[in-house]
Length: 255
Length: 380
Image 1: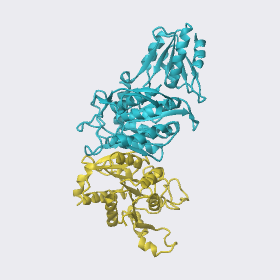
Image 2: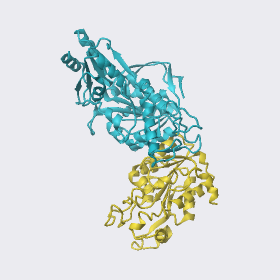
Image 3: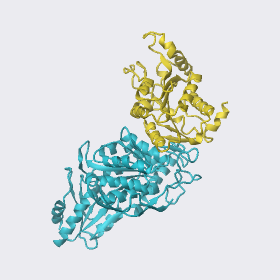
Image 4: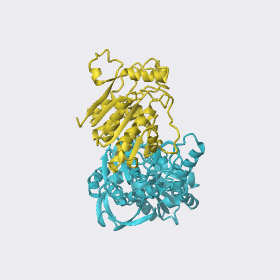
């Protein structure tokens, strides 16, 4: 199976750029499996990304047209591609800081316009590439390079944000939930409107080592333990939900 | 990869247009079929005209959430195969600077019209200025060679708009149409001729899209969906677009090429107009609306026996260095009237080799002919 996916990778690219224990490789794998399952025509697909670790998932790895853009602006570039040539499949793959902090305005407006663009937001809850600074997605209390005494600001609930802005499909899963995540990616690719999948991806290098998850395994275990389904969450009290990450499909216009 | 003759979009004849309307019509004539913008005075009429006209010519128009999104979507559309543009004024032009550098490095053809107002800051939104010329030259970080044109009439808002698209395609680079509020809102007659020359995008799939084999340094540019695996990045890249951010020689070669492809072709790019230079003792170097006042003033003062002449810069960047050097050898003095604090005067001083005088006005008003006459009298 895995070797079948090599056709979707550029032959001249020999290795991924990610740190040991990074979740982005799992996401890359699942994304290409979804492409393979759906028989998506890579010759007619443009992958757009911004700046940051997750922006390197498609660029230069994917054997398709790739547009590696400015920090935060992937959705603005993608809008130009899609509006001028609606026949192209346009997929945006980028990180939480890129898409939701510096690019937050473009995210809500792209969702409002409801163009047929699929957005995959790899959320590692920190700025990885620049050295582990606090993000708009860092949990309360998180230790980062810019919050040595703990993050004092609440993180975004990205799914509620994008749903509120008008997206047609909104889901959140962790790379520790590969089967459900792949199904969500396939659903997002299939919907001919604005679809958004938030993907929790462990960053042991920047987030883990500062927050007592001393190894890549510890980070994976944290996500496995904290990511619960919407159904499970419905049975828990507010206090019990404190550190939990609720996963599932939050909105699907198709019902 | 060459010019071809096409019919004009508007029926040939005379039109009574504002400068902003003429600029929009020039873009449509040049083949622009993607526009993204954000409202800002005094440029908004360009966007409004495009929004009405694009459905008639099968163009794609979108109003974006800000100027950053506007220019970024223009770059995306350009790579999807569009001749594409945005228009703005000072504050919006400031917001666009990062993406202008991205377009320069990725060699993305596009046109940005800046209808200048009196800055800095929010300044005087409805009043005229020409203070964005150095921003057009140096606005984004790093080294690149912008092309910037300066129209002086409604006719030139149309003609130089077409020229801007031709230059953008020919040199694969962002091109600025540096208009000002007075020209943008001026209404006067303009002529549409039956045919025009349009530069089509050079596409060749087997040549590297960021390569350096072409004599003029401009590689071919395929569009998304046409050939598989186009790699576009604003990071340093090799001729096929692969990121090479730790190879100094590749970076140096890339930066050198994107600069040289414009700078080394500047004699072909630069457009000027000359008046009475044969016998001129004092030469006025002017551009944009100010050149209109200069022509009036020069005619007047010549009747008084003062031998004045004019060099009108239709191209601001790359700068007409050789023209200034030549004038500096024959004239006693060069006079530069500007609606800024001396942005082009500084460039003239670099090359003139003779006395350079200037008049600078930043009160949001045009420079009247009488003012230039008074200043010229002082120099004779």
